Amino acid sequence: MLRKKVLGTCLESKFCMRRAAYILVFLCSSVAVSSQDQASESTRRQPYLQLNYHSGIFWNRSDYLRDAFDEPYRALELRFGFQSTGTEIWQQYNKYPRYGLGMHYSDLVKDPADTLIGNPFSLFMFYSAPWARWERFTLAVDVSVGLSYMDRIHDPVTNPFNDVVASHLNLYFDLNLNMAYRISKRMNMYAGYGLTHYSNGRIHQPQKGINNWGWTAGLSYLLAEPLESFIYQEPPEFSSSDWIQLMYSVGVVEEIIYGTADKVSYFTSSFTADYAYQFSPKMVVTVGMDVMYDASLALAIPGIPKDEVSTWQKSYLASHMGVQYIIHRFRFLFNLGTYFRQSSADRGFAFARAGGRLEITDHLSGHLCIKTKQGIRSDWIEWGAAYSLKVR
Image 1: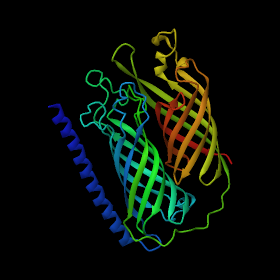
Image 2: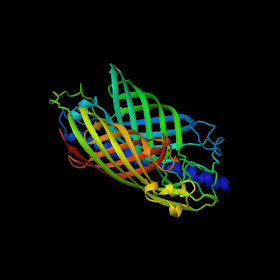
Image 3: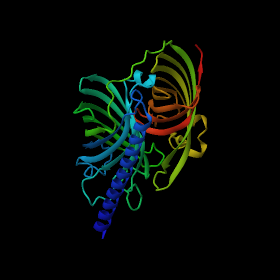
Image 4: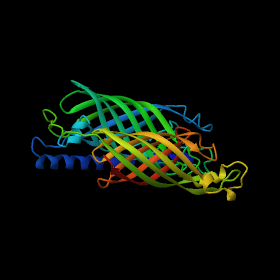
């Protein structure tokens, strides 16, 4: 009976993946045809389809799932994107990148009777940044970010050994270094290596996340007549500038009460003040201060009952350095910092912040980042806003 149920789940997942792929291909073809009718030769869009195959190993932190993660994982990925041509100056600054949408289906466990982990299905946005081009070859970094659905998650009664995923909806993140080889004017072949990560950022526990290291192989096909060359514009004169950046964000984390199966959610917040120096059209360096609050520290202050832990004891003071990479109105953000005032060493002494900001106006941006603990482990997700004030 269980075998039939599992087989039915696998068939249903594959049918949904196939149906979603048909819909994506139909939409892509419609966009490609309409774009050719409305565009001139110099501004014609360059849509393409890409199919990738992934396979590799797990970076496993679970004591219970060592056997399940012993075999290589496999995944299929379908992308629809655009090759930028230089119609906007930011495309030229970033060496004419590719960007678009995609879907990813991963068979994490080879055993078809697996009832612990499941197979995630992800929808994502991607950005492919070229580093160098040599005639037919292009070396690029791919970044994909989206949401992933996983059918089998931790349950203290029915699935207690799954300590890597505790929520159906998770962050999907993929970072890949790849080499493309142009087979013809319309077709490229890809080979690369990278990391795929699934996590909910400690919104639900237990949450060790799933990390895959592996190879990627793929083919892409351009849906439009290729342009002879990229568009080149004379860049406008650039002057360096100094900014003050203020950010406030909130979040939520979950903790399991020791000795029980009870889970409690706690509020978190972050405030940062940065001095930012933009020294090129796409690069910014920052240095700043942090005030962070984590209500779950009530469980981590030694010798004090959780109801008696003060707000000050649940707070951190910290400093950080960082870098921001600008792509049009979006910027990737990475900070590395250390605490200089804390009441508990439970989160370690160093942290990182990785994510992005999207400009809403010239001064106001939306902020979405993961703040880590003990170096690389997720602490909480920051949902907030940032305000930038130009001082020079």
